[in-house]
Image 1 (cartoon, one colour):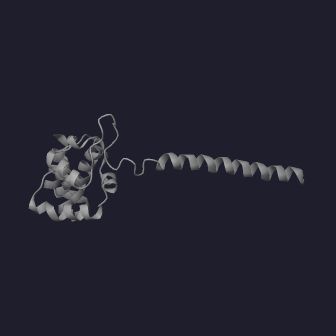
Image 2: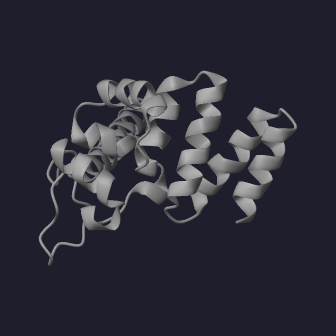
Image 3: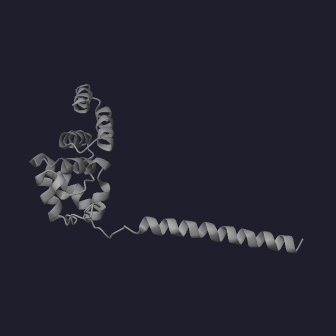
Amino acid sequence: MKTLEKAEREIEKGRLWRAKEILQGSVSHATYNEDVFEKLGLVLLQMGDLPDAGKYLFLSGVRKPEYENAIGIFLEKHRNPFNLFRTFPPSAKLRRLSDYPPQLAEELRELGFQEPPRENARAFVSPNVGSNIIPIFIFLSILLGILTLIILGIVKLVEIIFD
């Protein structure tokens, strides 16, 4: 895999920041890849960024004693399944628990994630939490725009009448 090879070359050169950029680019735009998540977690661990390292080590599904502290810090910071899921990069927001590595899928179940019904293709995490926020925001924005236009029209009408 080119991404891992490029990152490894940068690590060998002592340029952890560049390896991090390469791996984060892959995590943002590629498909779910446990090896990339683990490598990014290790780079972040070397850089001392424990919460972010914990996120990617957690998503890798690989469990080693040296990963426990970082993963624990990440999970402690994001206890609610909805908030935890929101921190996942796009490539890790999978539709079903069964799409994750088995170890990770089991941990997600233990954290409160639930598999969606087969007919529901939406993501499995906290199905009703936050699902209405965007439509409400759009509705309120449109309503505010209409009210602004009405008020401006009334002001203009008053100016015309009293001029």
